[in-house]
Image (cartoon, rainbow, N blue to C red):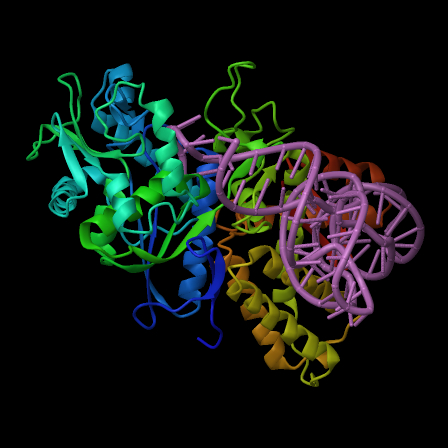
Length: 507
RNA sequence: GGUCGCAUGGCCGAGUGGCUAGGCAGAGGUCUGCAAAACCUCGUACGGCGGUUCGAAUCCGUCUGCGACCUCCA
């Protein structure tokens, strides 16, 4: 590792040099989905962002343990208080199936989607229901430390007491104790078991109709949301680990409470660096599952609708890699606005990048190749791309460097630039770096080349057709040559007449 | 109301105290039987008003607008 990675730490709100606890190793925890419904696209953005971070850390030489949980119990619908229902349980009740059927179904769907977006599997993907014992232990530790209280079989985290003894509550989300206190007046009206509105449940007594329940010292019940992340990150990464990630909307209350739980249980801060991926917007507004009461429509689009084009929000379907490319084009800490126009632009950009890659692979080094300004320029563009990634994983900027390289590559192909000005070593490096960025770091795949079967029949067939068309063109038999071109077009195969013959691509 | 963040050329989207981000669209050109594709060239933008500075789109203040969180979401 020659260059230090700097990253923006949400906890300090500053960009900091990244120093792992154990040299050469990184422990990273990212909050995964609650599997009570289909993954939605905003979810995918977050995980693609962290996939790129994961890939880049590994590419930089770190051994990374990447833990991303599946929340399959405890995430309540509505307020944490009595009367709220667990999301999974609710779904199971509505569908009249077992909660674990709900979990199985949506976990599968989630994994499928992650595969479609070409994200790498995390090293460990622990489930909340598989760690009930660890969670009960943590509740006990918090109680032992006097930072929680039991009410009617439920256990609540005492935020006021914690805030008084520890200055870290509210630090992440910028909330302060005075605000917590001032909220009291309004909210005390609500019938509540909690001593204070900002307290939150870490163990919840299950009412008899509740489907998911476990025995505990306090009641038959289930763990609170937030707790699973505290317990599982501790179990697999230790009491303090390097990086904790998640969507920006989890900052409060989820991550704030997670920190409180870990501090409350062991007195130590869970993660040194907190990274938050920003929201995916659609037409300027947060993409959200919830349905607008006025319009009756949700401001969202599912990944499948995006692929097929079956949505009023877009004019056509877009492939998963175009979406992934689109996500690479913005910084993970910025909001990204999904519009039809932006997607159309991304689709073209993606193709240009892939064509550039293909062109590059076909370039052959010149034996006379010598160092020159061009050679220097190529190398500094490559260096810059890595510098950009080291600077808080600035993928859009690194991508811009690749596009500048594409211009050079095309210049070399077209002959405005000469391979005599590029050393064989630089060309080799360029091929390697280009490949690595596109496929290993950005995690894109080349969809345009994946056509036909792998038996080569398609290629042979197309070559035959192209040859026939070529000879009819030579004979100025435009009727035949145009018929071939138009018919193929209808079959979604586009012929491209270039200087060095005709190539084809499937749309 | 509280907390935080953002306002960049037609669109998306980076960035920095003084040096062209990039992609798409648009204009011109090369190529082509025509077309498509591809390639080349081009645009000098940074919400309003003050201030700091030799110099600010970049720093500070302020106003306006937008968004997120505070209630379920990545």
